[in-house]
Length: 81
Image (cartoon, rainbow, N blue to C red; front, top):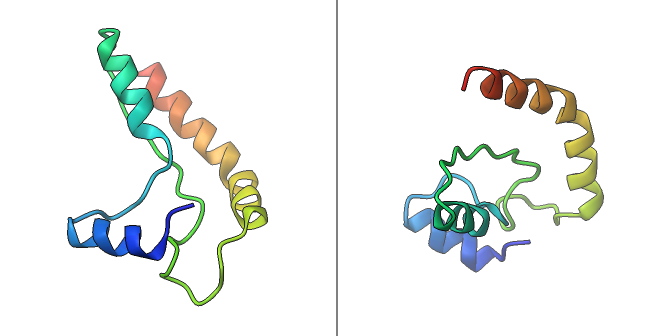
């Protein structure tokens, strides 16, 4: 997960969210000539924004809770491409 220092730096740069893996996949897809649409599912408050520490269990629980809605969103977008 991101560190509090990374969150502060990215916030100063104008970021509203921090992702772990979108950029490498986009870089590779574009290198292969693919068109890309990025959609992210935010599963936790960034490190340092909450008094509670981030836990992997929290991320898994949030993912499970929103999975069906996220799947409908992605399916709806893909069906319109």
